[in-house]
Image (tube, rainbow, N blue to C red; front, top):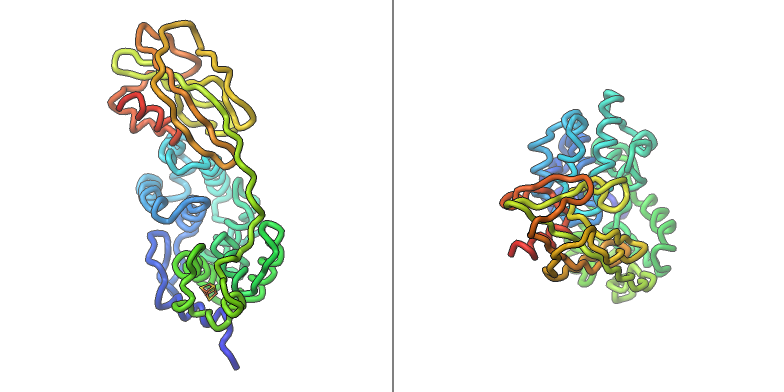
Amino acid sequence: MAASISDILLDWYDRHARDLPWRARPGSPATEPYRVWLSEVMLQQTTVAAVKPYFEKFTARWPTVEALAAAPEEDVMAAWAGLGYYSRARNLVKASVAISELGTFPDTEDALKKLPGLGDYTAAAVAAIAFGRRAVVVDANVERVVSRLFEITTPLPASRKEIRTRADTITPSDRSGDFAQAMMDLGATICTNRNPRCLLCPLSDRCQARASGDPARLPAKQPKKAKPVRQGQAYWIEREDAVWLVTRQGTGMLGGMRALPDDGWSARGDGSGDPPHEGDWKPAGMVTHTFTHFTVELSVLAHTNSPQPVGEGEWWPLEKVEDAGLPTLFAKAARLVTA
Ligand code: SF4
């Protein structure tokens, strides 16, 4: 009988698994659920190379879920600065509190999905990798591999259901966590976006897209709409070797993060273009940053002559501005002024 796709892939994984700080070696006891969960949250929309230093920093500072639950949210947000998608960090704190209150880490997909911020993917990944449960784990790498293996030509996102059904058919009951990680590794290192290395692929003789030529055309995607460009202003208010930083309100974009005061720009519209008070504002240049749904062009205006603070905030020492945990957009603005 021909070997199954999962057997072939697990055999390949045993020999070629990537060595990652959050991962147990193939076939060995699972990593602690906290580390699996933390890494999976960090890896959403972010590369392995970018995540590694953040993972090391978080696990050194907050080695357990209880330690994270006890941390002030602003410390966690500041430590997360630069990783983007900040609602992930807010949900991380909320979920760690919920887990601490439960007194045990939930170990099924359904129970995990009840935690703040844990969607289908993360719940399946943690259930499989940390607890050895059979779960169908589908991330962007898996979508790509499965689309090619079964030559699914319907464009994403309409093809998601079919991809999931197909992924379900090849997911084994045993070693489902290793299988999920093997699929991720295959997608990240062999079945890559532009130039799949089919000659090195353990599944090449099972792959329908390879058999019909040009697997790189899959997964097909709906053409993307152009992102809107918003205009905004940010204000650099400096006094006696300190700059005025505010904490952004609410749970919306960059909520809870330290930032420069701004003119109220958002994903939905431009800012007012009006500085918060009269005075000697000097243009310091412009920075551009692209978020998931829009791009912002942020003009930075600096005021250093008897400036007034704006809103709730704090005077932050200029020499430590790199440690303020500013999100990338405002870190770029700070660099523009201080360069
Ligand atoms: S044969 Fe090529 S396209 Fe098919 S799964 Fe392997 S690397 Fe991807």
